[in-house]
Image (cartoon, rainbow, N blue to C red; front, side, top):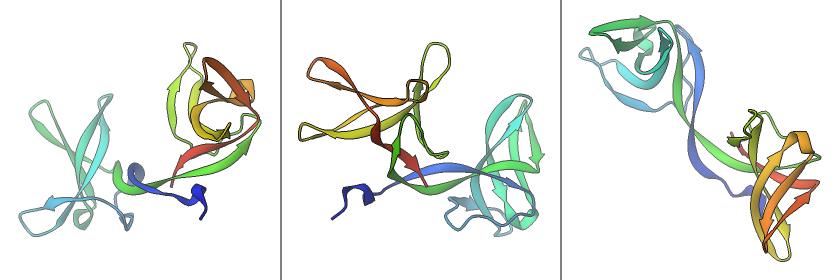
Length: 152
């Protein structure tokens, strides 16, 4: 039994353009009047990121804004994903690591964990410091070897 293989269902957004195939785990949102499948998506419009109806049969996504429907040919599609833990060292994180926060000067902080004193404890990976920090027994402890939460 490998604790690192535990996976939990979750969600993420994948970039798509009109005409590209839908990912197999795309979330179906409904059905159009002609029976076409509508998927859950989102797209930019005038600086806003808006929920969108994505209709692959018509090679388009639509958002609504300011009283009108707007067609979009570049959009993101909501898909099911999975969380997993990946081993890392010295502040490194995988490209699909989950960003949980950021420092006051904008550095991203990632979710990490480590086994310490019989506890599997969650903390923050701060890449610029080259380590994972955990809160433990009133202190902040640092580790060079740890696992990072990623989304697949």
